[in-house]
Amino acid sequence: MIGIFEGIAGMTARRCGGMWRFLAERVHARKAIELERARNEATMAILPQLKPGTDFYESEPGGRTRLIRMAPAPEHTAPVSPSTPEMPRGQIPS
Picture 1 (cartoon, rainbow, N blue to C red):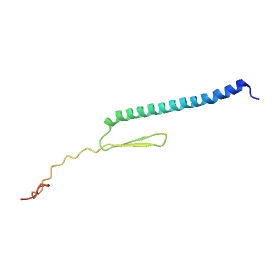
Picture 2 (tube, rainbow, N blue to C red):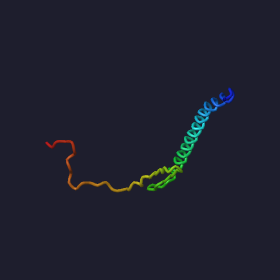
Picture 3 (tube, rainbow, N blue to C red):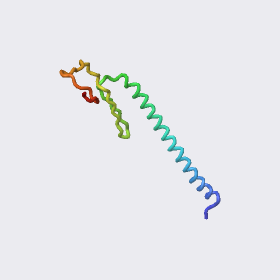
């Protein structure tokens, strides 16, 4: 026969186990958020230092990989003028 103290201790352990599990998951989730914030801040700090046309790969232990591709530098070209003038679009010739 289970004594009253053993019964109360068992009930308390089950109830507190749920609370401890909740608190542990909450701390784990907060740490993941803090890690993601730090990773984003570091990425934002390095982006201005990248040259145009480079790729920046960031890997995580969980297997997720982030790719940031910097746009290539714009090429300076002369505007192209057509040899024959074209009718502006959207207008009906009269």
